[in-house]
Length: 218
View (cartoon, one colour):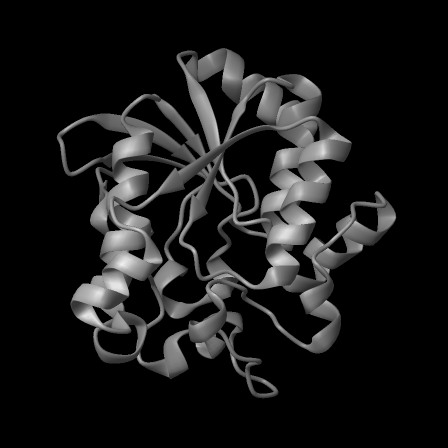
């Protein structure tokens, strides 16, 4: 997969396209291709209020340097309000926290588009083993869109080889040993030999729900 694949996919599928971006290394490869083909493409970022300071700094830097059309998707409640009502859900009910701060805002945000680009890879975790490059997904509201994951078959080695070869800046947290980076309270460095997402949510779960609450239509 490369920039030409992205261009052809956009032309073939048509419609309004967006890309979800957590500013992890895979997302940046897909985003780099997209911005060269369609500079104005909406870049959807889930502003949970719990990200690492390094993530926010890197996000803002790349928005400036790449001229990104960033759209921050936020939950209906601020972190302070949510914690005043429910306490720290990321400790007591992480699935509910993800639902409120990630899944619900994204499912609403995606309803404006018909093509959704992601940086997902099969190798990332067992829950993604059957990921296809192009899939049709039905959102909870009923809308069906094309979900495109150009890196579905890529390995971790290929991701980093491409990143270094093409001089794509990356989130500094990787240099500290992180492999899959989300909200700070729910992200740790995985053990040697473990899959990338084993460091998320203390191993209690592998997905926040974004890629499971939308229904794969095959």
